[in-house]
Image (cartoon, rainbow, N blue to C red; front, top):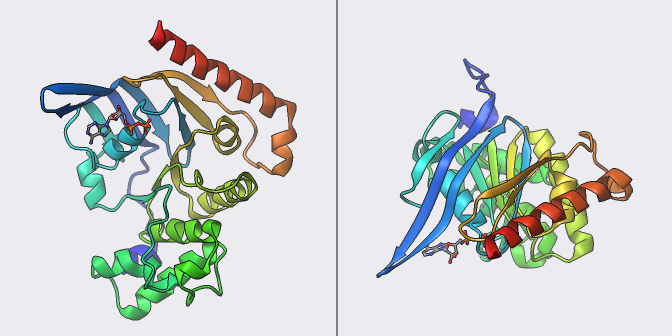
Length: 274
Ligand code: ADP
């Protein structure tokens, strides 16, 4: 149980968390073959917040699944902290959050969060509870440990799923449209919360979204993908400083960056269509 309670510094600091080189992924179904991704090459540094934007079906989810070691065979190279995705998965180096919180309705909030520790047989009951409660406090849900998921709003349920993803204190958080089902006001609030949580938990975040404004607001870099087969068409650095607030969305630079990303997105789409 010490992993989630006491942090020991790594012997060697590896600045690069993720490295992809010439990644290509195809799916075979009977006689047909879909090339979902090709020539995907990029690096992600420790504690970077990276968003992926691209048209539906361009391979964003496939990309996260590959990095998570959940999408089977592929060509090229992927390294997560210098290891293969399968090794990183076994080492519980990442947590995942999806659009649907996928909570167990019959378990209380705390029991949902500690479930991964229970499944792995880690720690005593008391240890597991303590870690779950720490993570719930981190996502702003102190006092809701004994509620059931159906007693919470959509945004609160998604916070529970973030707490559950953080329970092994992973260095890497993979998020696939986590706030896609929330209304815009709530989504804006969750974006601010996520920045606070990722800073406090010192995680590197890979974030898939359909919202250009959300990607720009959250990220250090936005990686723009073309239509299928998905490849990277732009890597836009978001120079909005490290402290983002509600006022950031009104900053003229924010609007310039939104325009820049939108243009890259359309250029990538058009080049695939022509
Ligand atoms: P996105 O997340 O950008 O919407 P996906 O990664 O879900 O895109 O899908 C990329 C492409 O790969 C799509 O054409 C999709 O139909 C195909 N695909 C994804 N998963 C599978 C699978 N398990 N079997 C066959 N094709 C798949």
